[in-house]
Amino acid sequence: MARPNLWRRTLSGIVPATMFLAALPAMNGGERVSGKFAMKYSQQHPLPTGEQTAPVLLASEAKGSNADTGPTEYMDGAAVTIVEIADLTQGNGPHQGYVTFAKGGETVLNRFTGRISTRLSAQKQPITTFEGSWKNISGTGRYSGVSGSGRYKGRMLSASEFAVEWEGDLKLLDNSASR
Image (cartoon, rainbow, N blue to C red):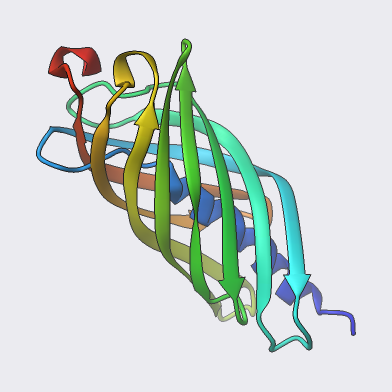
């Protein structure tokens, strides 16, 4: 059965937003970091389980860039890739995935988990937001041995673009490396 355009727009907006959140740095007593990124889906793969009201698994990849907003410079201008999966019913449900920051041969990988929420505006257009937490998994170069965690929140800007704001704490083996 074909899904209405509204349902497809809602699904296409959910995955990128959640992926953006995954890229957040770590929080565990280290230096305070924060940023924001603008993302655009490069791949989306919805896997419906039945009728319009049934759950849909959505696998996606989004690409964009990070802008540092914190007191400590962290991955400003870095390329960001989010790989995510969401389990959604009517545009609402959990999502999880990974965010990779890459700049100048150095990378940081974060895992995120959160929740996507979708409601209809007065004009019957979907408004999709998401939020959750992230944790550093690994890093290369000066970010080797990185740890930390934080929170993220974001919103869909269109069916293919989303924005995310994140904050947290980052701890390096050598604290001078984050400068």
